[in-house]
Image (cartoon, rainbow, N blue to C red; front, side, top):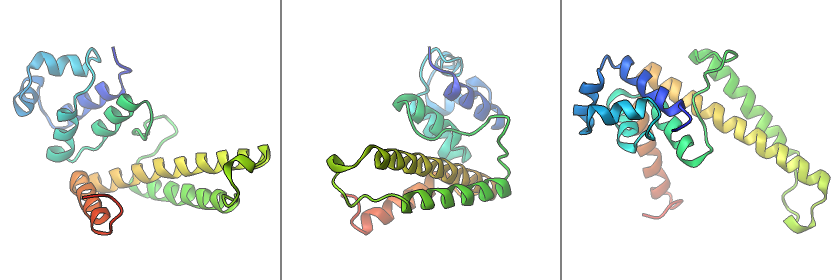
Amino acid sequence: MTNGRSADAVKEARKEANMTQQQLSFEIYESRESVSHQENGRYRVQPNISKYFAEQHNNPWVAMEAAAEYTGWGPVKLDGEAVDLHRASVAMKTREELTEAIEAIESVCVANHPRSIKEFDRKQLEEAILQAIDAIVALTQYVAVICVDYGFSWFKMWQKHRLKLKTKGFIKQ
């Protein structure tokens, strides 16, 4: 059994798309039982379902949840009681998290060799890392919400970004 977040994301995405499990199974070339097992957490959500919802329904949440479930880390959809995913709220929170991350990063020195840092400096570095992770999560929510709300393809935006990285020589062809 899985932790359920990605399973819940599949079920929610399928319902938002007004599809039955049978209809989804036809789209992704899997049995209805397989879809059911993935929605109920008996099986892990498979990459083809994540890709299907990202590409065909511009729903990034299934892929985020599944990736975090597979790796044990990474951004997930913020869905707690204290979260407001309205685009204006997400934009404001993202600016706040970016500011905090920049301040934390600027407050640490990474010029010294890692073996020579003191415990106090190590704790400051850890705090800077945590602030950077907060910013990554906020940015991920921002990009997902803006893509969904304004109809930009989450999938195509990441494809464009990857092409830019290749073009600039930041990743290998």
